Length: 190
Length: 190
DNA sequence: ACTCTCATGTAATTAGTTACATGATTAG
DNA sequence: CTAATCATGTAACTAATTACATGAGAGT
Image 1 (cartoon, rainbow over the protein chains, first blue to last red):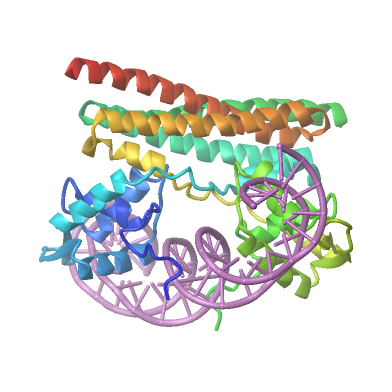
Image 2: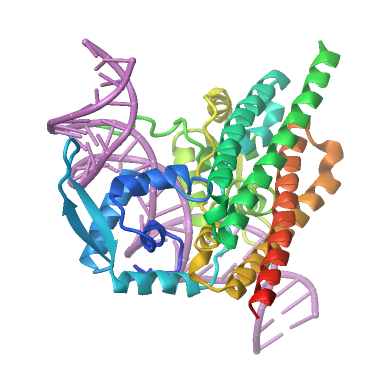
């Protein structure tokens, strides 16, 4: 007896939907899918090889994709993944399904900030600086994407990237302000 | 042979650390822990009863907490959870461990925006409006928290909430702008 | 010599969600 | 009489991560 009746073709955002979306435009390899996840989707999704390859195997069995073995020279052979008509239907069904509320973003950084009372200001400042560096990298990545591709991007895609950019800018500004305030407090103390 | 040697007292942010942090100030019940997660931690963590109670049971076995049964009248009995000295050590070890990079925020909304080319502008606008509503609620929740407790909050805690507030403001502004642009495009189309 | 990129995959393990199960009291 | 709040827990199942395993070619 199934407790979760929505095995696949289910309603929650999962790696299968993301992969199908990527394949809508062009055939890709598992390796390329992973690269795209890191380079362009990392702001709102992530997945490892340990998820990607087993998912692709299952999707092939279900007839959502086909694998085409391509011999290369100088490089290992690759399996080029093509989406099938059934796969396209499945992706369109995902797009028509009700939008889910944003799933919980778990942030170690924010958690520690919240518990900042249990460490010294200096430690909190260290965390803030680390988050600052990380956020700056993410922002640069998004800005790079935007300037490179904005002319060929769909309006919805542009909004997606802009949301990321503006969120990181806001985060960075608030972190910078926080560092200044904490440094002032540190000085007053000692 | 263990593949993951960091069973507990591990390095990744998990429900155990969050629960210990909550108990540092005062004893709580499992029910109250869930409420706090929804009301104050929801911006950077979430957990269900199906995680909380089994985690508490394991933590008791490991001596990180103790349960104190309290009889109430008119209400069901409750198990008040107290943190032990070992539990405090464990939480401090978490705070000293290296800060993790922000774990992947998986967002159905952002994913759909990115694949907006496969649906009409009207559908994208619907998604934007839904996200707008949801983000506004989250923002209001944070603003409420801030105005209620800002005088008793630690500076680090204030920064934590401000980051959330500014992120949501930025998101809302960008969504609003996006809706205007898409509506213009819809009109032009006819 | 070493490291990076390309390339595909499996095994062990963890952590989590959803749905179920129970039941008293209070407020509308 | 119906729904919400208070309160604790379990069983079935899903989804994912990490680490391992393999191997060729290119650049420094």
